[in-house]
Length: 356
Image (cartoon, rainbow, N blue to C red):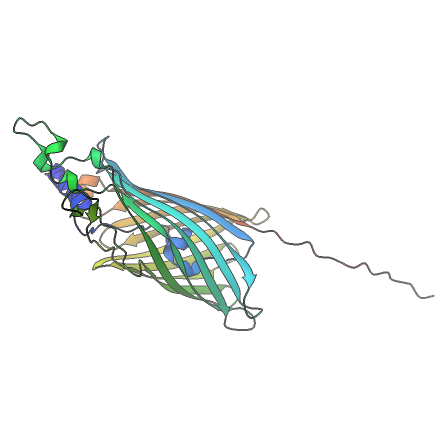
């Protein structure tokens, strides 16, 4: 029974005219700011920020050597580059790349995007900031069609002949398209020990065509195969985080994310506690739990050493798939580093002449 369900899943992934699979997402969503919200680009104190995150999912279910589980690497770099129209405003830019890959045919969704954001200071002290911006870039969806087998290609003796399959001839190797994402974030420092942020983003604004199915050939069947129509749905994301210092040693950061993509919803809440392990070396240990509704419990651990932050996450599957997954969901590792390059202060020497 499990094998039949997996075959049906792969059939939907590869042949469905409109894919209903997951878009790129991470359990450690705040460790991947540019895939969470374009408006988080360049929103930090420092010269530049570099980071990466890697997720592996469903290896316990899709465990055939020829069938790849979900694997999702992503890297990015961003920076606040120039002052805005006012002294308390600034402009942030960045670049991110990611790839989502799964299945026998290596169904791959990859992207490279540039981002630009205007951060608007709402008060003179810079305690409240409204950030508005977006991403623009190219994306590609591709599959190794030679690794796929279709029902109409099987012979009566059980052998497979690829040339007999009409479905095989309808598969396009890749689909390239451009994409635009937009986002907005409001952040505010309430006092010396508390701050928060809340944001909304919309990915795939103009729903580009990413179909891998052809509708036939131009020129009466002798020309180039014509791409079918399969629009990637928009993904709307709302998120928020509240940070508070409980004591000189302990801090707490509850957060949430809500995502929806053509009727498929994801709701996740998390709580991350930080413990200042070594004040002199600026080492903080992070630990926490989260829950993705009707899907998984998130276990979170990590560490911050000065400007370097690393994190690990593991999803304990609690959905109806737990019998097949044996409660094993996804694993993530993430890191980001803030580079700080400041000009040394120029101090003019003062000569004190004593009075006699």
